[in-house]
Length: 377
Ligand code: ADP
Ligand code: MG
Image (cartoon, rainbow, N blue to C red):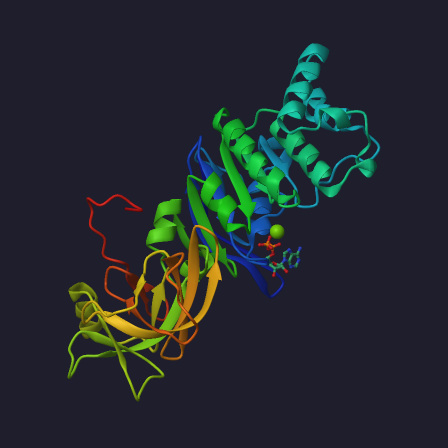
């Protein structure tokens, strides 16, 4: 098991990682997901021992690793900048970690061929890194890290430079390859699809802070705060400013910017209770995923909010319809062929079943789902 306990890393006055506590199981594939500058590479470097924490400890199977040099941690890392040996061929780059461990010539031949085939670089084995494309170099770096056995594999954006098709394929190969290893894998990416498809659990990182650490399902369905919600999902979640009115329509939210024609949104009983009891957050935000809401051309009940069609994007199997509610734009996944035109009035089902509610710092409510209804029905 790999643990970071209250780890903070400062570079001068700049805090790259702030009070991070995570634990990763042996055999677990954990993805660190966040925007550029979030502290992802710093976290990997801290685990690898390339840099030491300012405060806190890195533990492997309960043993404190602080002060243990990288070569004694039995970890294998892919660096963001590849760092291949430019004077060695691809074959020798791949063989390097095995030679350092004194494997037999036959074993080395076998393992290099095997990994080269998986990564589709067999035809490049005699070349030097200088004669490879960025994507090819990245695959060699990945191969060099995965070719040997280690307790922990640390992969810093290892497939980000591949073209879309190859990246998709490599995602599958990487997952299959890592599942065969008795090891912890910590994989860094800023790509949401990669994070979701590879990970058993995701650390969502922003400005050095862990925003959420959970399974892909948890991060998607119950985002801890607005940052996580906005950063996970495609198309991105839409947000509406709102304020809570206890009276005269108890338990309703009013979407702001619509004083002339207020849009009332009903709250679940539990969310209304929370808002009545807590000091009210400065700002309430309604968060809506395109696939959770729907629109109709006639109102069905009091929970339908009026909206105006702003733009329609066709995806083939369905449309993404952007509608205007008050001052806010909301994206809705709709069946194609609804025949909508810009400025048409439609009705949006903003109900406790279809939206998230966020306060200043944390989520207040998530869509209320029927436990027995499978996802996507
Ligand atoms: P990410 O990999 O998520 O893009 P990094 O871990 O590289 O982010 O960087 C996190 C923050 O720490 C950034 O603001 C970066 O500028 C800063 N940082 C990283 N390494 C150093 C360093 N060696 N010296 C000073 N600042 C650094
Ligand atoms: Mg980085």
